Length: 347
Image 1 (cartoon, rainbow, N blue to C red):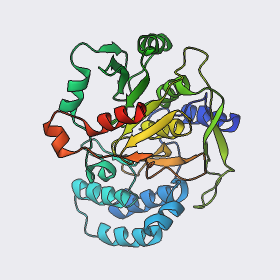
Image 2: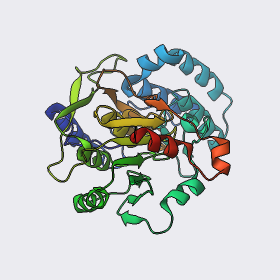
Image 3: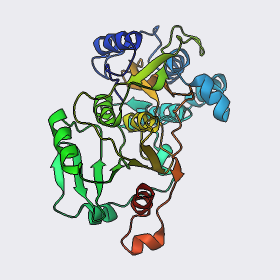
């Protein structure tokens, strides 16, 4: 997840610009650590310290599910005594990072990438690609990362699969112009795992009618778990180009993560938008990177984001209407979430 300069305060903007200079690649450490020996124990110690001093959710996760980072250190140092191969070390360090329950935390080695995906794998998908194709059909419009069409009840349907795919302002103008006659709009971001936050903010600005407080952010000011700056507001500015002024239903599921999770946060603050579907997957920390004594890279959340009520969105956002895909609807060729949204938008 990258950060939109347009949305954030000047303090946060400066922070992001500095991070862009310092963190030129994931393989280059943004954080200098004291030297540890390239041994299983040394790598465990180095990884534990990186997280202990720079990860931004240790206190929050201790409160949420009882994470004890000091106890984790002792547990994994003990296990390190039995490590004899690089594969065993990778498995050990990956397990240590998985204790954080964070999809933005990864370990990178030449042979593998550690990842934590339980934030969506442990839940129903509430999405079917085969059903979605029935709604889009084959004659839908494509504009960069967008797919869209007008459904037969004159409700627009816009699909954005990933914010990794950019969309230009002219493409958004064209899409909204073609959908302008619709009485309402469904935006489907299910399975959107994130990407560039600039793409998310660019789209959200088309549904914003006045400058709106949509959240807050902080940054670390020291190595203590609670060493943070004051809350810095995140403002969503209305687009100066064509905007949508009618009702919107935003469809979400557990695979909505990172930039898509933050897009949901923005949209939730807009009066004409209703969130329909499942709790999002979360991912509210902008990542930093560092490296271990053996050269492996680690990515971790370092800059937390909060909603407009100063509540963490690290573990996701509740929809306004919790709707699950119904198996009977599936066999009838109907997407329960889309059909619920269609009925909601014409009430």
